[in-house]
Image (tube, rainbow, N blue to C red; front, top):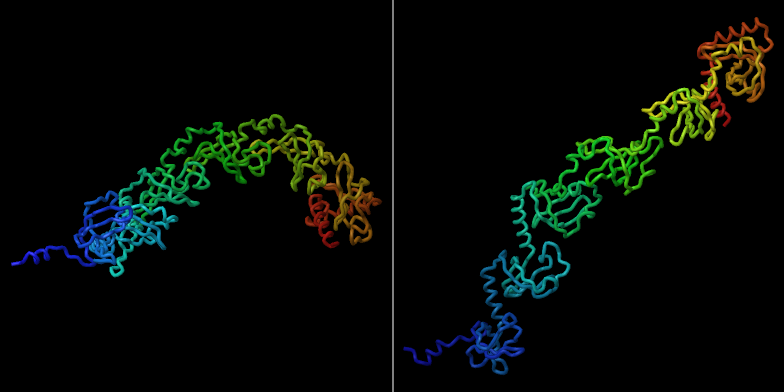
Amino acid sequence: MLTMEEALRQSAPRFAPGEIVKGTVIEVRPREVLVDIGYKSEGVIPRSQFEDLPDLKPGDVVDVYIERLEDREGMVVLSREKAEFKKNWERILSICNEGGTVEGKVKAVVKGGLLVNIGVEAFLPASQVDITSPKNLQAYVGNTYRFKVVKIHPDRQNVVLSRRELIEQERQERRTKLLNELVPGDIIKGTVKNITDFGAFIDLNGLDGLLHITDMTWGRLNHPSEMLKVGQEIDVVVLDVNREKERVSLGLKQKTPNPWDNIEAKYPIGTRVKGKVVSLVPYGAFVELEPGVEGLVHVTELSWTKRIAKASDVLKQGQEIEAMVLGINREEQKISLGVRQLEANPWEQAREKYPPGTRVKGKVRNLTSYGAFVELEDGLDGMVHVSDLSWTRKVNHPSELLKKGDEVEAVVQEVDVVNQRISLSIKHLTEDPWEHIEKYYKVGDLVTGKVTKLASFGAFIGLEHDIDGLVHISQVSEERVEKIKNVLSIGQEVTARVIKIDRAERRIGLSIKAANYTPEQLKIEQALLDQLKPGEDLVALQRAFEAAEESKAAEQDESR
């Protein structure tokens, strides 16, 4: 049977350094708390270790850790902080194997990350705070979060946490759930996460979807930033879901009807419309009639009469204009517009104003290799083809007879409204001299004229009635002539005999050496000319003039 002393010794609490015991608060001071653990002396604990107990008062019972049984003053050394640490460390080891989760409060910013109180102090690396590296770690201090335990060091009593892994895990769960639930046509709320040149990525609460620039608006959009900004909340339409690749295509414009669905009813052909020039290209201008609906005014539809090289010569971007609907292609989403149709077509009036046979006057506006353009009125030109400049001369270029700015008279030959052409003729102002050539010249006549052109085969002589005759090199002199320029020169006046007239071929052959021939001698020369081969028949003015130009160019090359 136990004695009273033995019984008291066995029932007394066990006091030893490293033990956790119950203690009663005796006094709460500003900087310390006096605690009685039933030992021969009380212990003093810093008030800072009771921050989580703001209402602490005498009589409260708390767990404390015995550091030493006596200090120099004979008082027991206690710590509530170490008691809590030991209890929590054991709890963490029992419930938080690596990979477990725990809740904690961020205490402070330390080198490389954050210090977190999860019952014990744990380390949260900066790279594990969030999905994206935080710019301001101080913003997390004082906040409570859930963390994943990624590493425990029992020897050092150290814990490493990750908040990022939990966020990624939660996002993956939400992503999987969303992918299984989303159906094309759904309207879902999202936040603009990132903007690129080709579109915007939308955060759908854990799942990113792509909103392509072409699906943002029915209208014209140069860059997504014109319509969206990062952080903006928007409602989007699910267009497509690829569960294997975890991709979602989104749309904004699909929330409103396609403006092209009833386009023919809204803009019938022939309707006058108003719009804004949104783009200028070399071949025309795009005009916005409403958001998502643009029409093209081709450069040829800007004016009936003016030759406009590019649309920017007469239009400016942003300009409000009026036009007429010329055609619609709903499948290709194209509308053809015209500006000139708003005014009367001057070419329709030209048919009545300038019927064939009308004599007109105008200024030579331009010369080309094939003719001269004559301005009849503002914006309305007629064209004199080189073949209509003279009855008798073979004109290779209109500059031989005309120059820019000349006032000329002509006769209207034809008005082509469809192709917008007015054909003019200067030669038809007078009668064709070849119709009555026998009135002016007969074989055997002695004529006088000036040399107008020289060629290797002969010389052209300008006669009256604007007719040219040709003196072949063999008809210049009784003696053999090697080079025509040795005996004749431009402007030189000569007397010659008409030795051949071919009305069908519109040609006159002359002979200088036959000026004093008898009729019998003339017949011999005529026979010689008639014996020339077709390729050598240089009296034919059409071939002769062409050959003259070639010969002239060859002589110029030789002289260089």
